[in-house]
Length: 202
Image 1 (cartoon, rainbow, N blue to C red):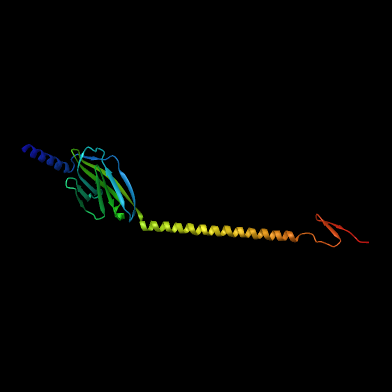
Image 2: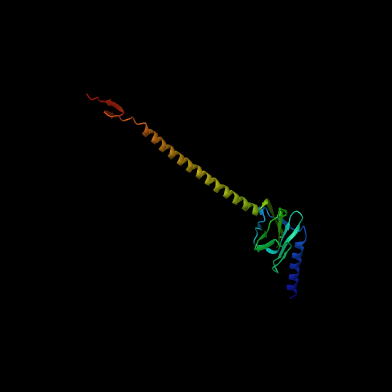
C-alpha cells in the first residue's frame, strides 16, 4: 500500500514538473498553413509522431501574445474554452481546433502544445491566413460572374442568329436578281442557250 501511494506521488510530481516552463520542450518539424475566408470556418490540425507517448494535456494558444484558447485534460476529459468561437477535438496523438466566423483579427500563428509523459511538452505551429473579403462577397462575385456569362452567351446567340438571317435574305435576293437578268423572249425568235436566232417570214 505504501509503495503504491509512493508511486502515485512520484508520477504526479513528474507530471507537475513536466508542466513547468522550459522543461523538455520539443517542436514539431512540420508547420501547417491554412487559408480561410472571412466569415467561414477554419480547421487547424496538429499531431505528434510518437504514438507510444502518454498524452496528459492539450493546449492551443495564439502564438503572438500566448493567449490561451482552449485546454483539454485527458484524465478528466474536461475542456476549458476561452473563446466561444473555438471548438476542440482530440483523437489520440492528434488535435484539431475549428474557428467559426473567422475574422481578420484571427490572422496569424497558433501553437498547439501536447503535454506528454515522459517526454514533456511537444509544440507545433499552425499559421492562419484570413482573406480580406468575406464569404458573402465571394458568393456574390460567383453569382455576378454566372449572370455575366449567361448574358454574354445570349448576346452571342442573338448576333449569330441575325447573321444567319441576313445571309439567307441576301442569298434569296441575289437569286431574284439573277432570275431577272434572263434574256428577253421575242416572237419569231428562237432563244437557245442565250443566243438569239431570228426568223423572218416572207
